[in-house]
Image (cartoon, rainbow, N blue to C red; front, side, top):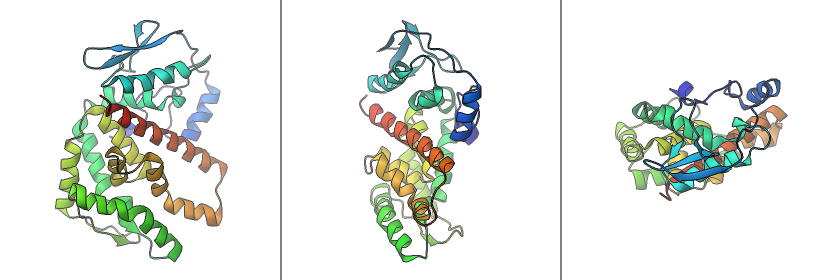
Length: 264
């Protein structure tokens, strides 16, 4: 399922899940030229469609590129409009996410939901360091509020552990998260939740962003507390920085899509 959802609209330009490797492949393969002059958003049969020179934009599976709200369709249209002489799919994260929702998640919603729940059963926020003291404090500051929110709002009381040894989560807690997700099983919202969960390693962070409990930047920082600690002490190489920047771009795009869906 995760292979399906990782760049489902893969072309020669999106042929590797590693964003740095994708960029390397892209440099070797010419990008398609921009073939349209005008981009528009118009009402569709069940939402709003994106049109290029008056013709429907389509997904890789040839389905109409139709999104639930005008604001969501506008995000995709703006990405098309921002392309210059060539079309760079890597620079169009909302469009790729929409393709995933239409061509993949709409057919496999239950499987996507179950994948998010698998993340929840071993959520990043439940695994704490026992040392050094500075890292422990940072984890507590960044993560405890989300754990409390999950308990108080979702009814999910999760167990915490020190180290990497797996801790079994109560069935009731996972069931509560599943019930919350069932109310968010619309393909575009579910696709955005899955992407944010995959990028952060935390279903709780993605659900908190979707609920408006956290903004995307705060959630992104929370997901990288451990990594940032390591960078401060050991430094970071350029490829790791490029990968992180690409993933952050996709995270923020997913959060923007959720906000736009709320405007329906």
